[in-house]
Length: 126
Length: 438
Image 1 (cartoon, each protein chain N blue to C red):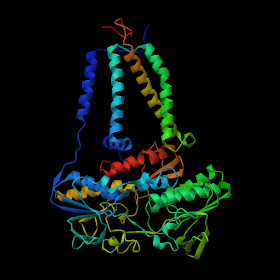
Image 2: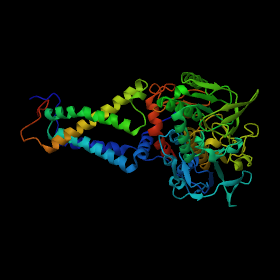
Image 3: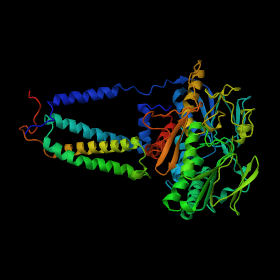
Image 4: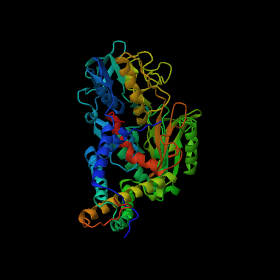
């Protein structure tokens, strides 16, 4: 039986994209995630307006991710064969959605820092 | 306005979280392989999938060893890609890289093939006459395609008049696509077969039959065509449960199956394939065919005394223990890949599992202990059933199905995810294996 270790998966991804591109993508994804978390701390919570706009953009990211995978393979939607294939499509869609949602949220937060008065309402106050 | 999703957070908390993440990433242990001091002379015959992989691993594990790899080819071929090339999905370049690209620093690469092996004297002689003495020998030569055993065939024929030869190399696979493309444009009689010897990737002839069927259907010429699969024995595959599935697919795709036919030759002018059967010779007219010749150990191996004496006499696979891959008569000789005389698995997937077993037993011996790794016969085949779908069949010596993703990827189901693995993930995994990292 095949056994996968974390190290093997990293090696495979490095071969797939090239080590430089792979780690660049990892760093970019990590930076966006860290920036998102930083915005949560800076703004002391989620800004609902930004979040709604980010959520509206999210499906575009999901669709783009699914189309990208279709583009890089010689296969298409007609080849989806079993439940696991639908789960793969769903997984790709969700990953693309979350990625774009975080990016859009961060982009808004960077462009427009909140005024000194609180723009986000925490669940509890110190 | 009141947010439902807001957090009670501070900058200090953020920094704490970031520090925690860094600490966690630092806690992941570095590469664990311990190096062993040795002055052993190790010779690896062949710098293909098995040779390159074990070379990289041994260079990392051993300190002070003299490791020599013997291979006269400047090109490394990614053979699992040949089917994709012969299906028009990749160019020949997809499968070609430089042999030297995969070899570790510090290894001595003798750019000649072995002409003779003397396991009694622990010596290899190259085609150029160079003598190389060894303490340990790893035979990873791969196998030889015996084109001469197909009467009337010449590799110059490939790509024209309906003749393909997917196995012959990347350029021939590309030429085969040109012939298959022309055939499927017009339709006609497609005849596919496999040789009567052991062969690398026994699923490949079946895949290529199905891919040709797929192109005929896509181009609207399937109804004007007849496809025939000619098998050397009764069973279409070495594993009964997979044979049943392949039989179903052959029926479903309306491929006529003939059994117990052994390829003899081809008459390119009359477009006929000649087979030997128990009831005399048989002829099949074709408009397109994929020539796959008998396969044997290279001559130098067959003459070395390393082959089984009572099995595969016409093929010459080496006599290794099926679990340790160590030679049964010469304990300082190991085998990796297609050259091994074991019941199953002339595939790159098997190579991936041969390599750590040989590494374990060799390094253990150099440390003065016994190795413990055992090869269970694992091999796998992404059995393509059409462009875009495949079955990820994995099995062992006992004919068990041994799925890597049990309960997730069903082995006998035609799935898109299995195709994605073949098309996208397999080559990076193979490359990582060559570097000794997978």
